[in-house]
Image (cartoon, rainbow, N blue to C red; front, side):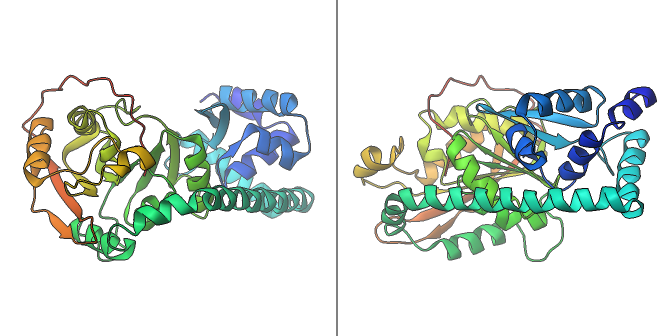
Length: 337
């Protein structure tokens, strides 16, 4: 960061307001325009100046562009930390600026409420198919409790490190484990599902949770990025589960943990047509072979019986000795739960 670019970017009231909003949550450019009461092209120009100065960052999610805060403790060099403190002090000391920021936050609350309303409406339209599938296996609560136990989560301590929730769907699993992670990345292929997850996860502090659109066959992350990787009712969508797990191994740090929640092998063919399942569950032998080939050391599996489907939880550690990067086959399947 350069001091002249930083001060120039902070020399405009609209940009100051944007930075204070981003201190609370990630926002789309269109949402910023709505809060600020300005045209989207005008807000986009302000956004470009902030990003060029390194004060904010853009992130594309489908056809939307989201803006996130890039300064503050642990996010930027000392100059960025100082800029964040200056903005906080300005709101404390300047009553006029504080009043404007408070009004912006009231508009922001309306944005959050609108997100929740849209998410509820989307889920209501799809509730029947979700409920039908849930009737086939044990309730979610015992599965979630067993998953927490398998991951060694029993307190509010940070035990999961940098966590990736692949196929986050409604964001439930990311929500469940956010308190136990230093950072959570919730990934899904579907923009509609990400909107549902965003409404659920917006209660967490800005910077704790990132939502990313992407496919589990080509994860958009560097090698060894994550300490814990979760697949909750996702792998049965994969046409090539071996390739998906090899990709998961690539982005898991040596010694990191992979957890898979999915169905034991079954014969419910209607799930292929009604719910787009590419795989009718997995046997223990099949899963152990997939995990070993991908570079994971398997741990004892957990079974939770239902009628007629049994849910299995497989966990494994990333084999630090396996430095080979398997070839990732292309997959047309999506990442969602």
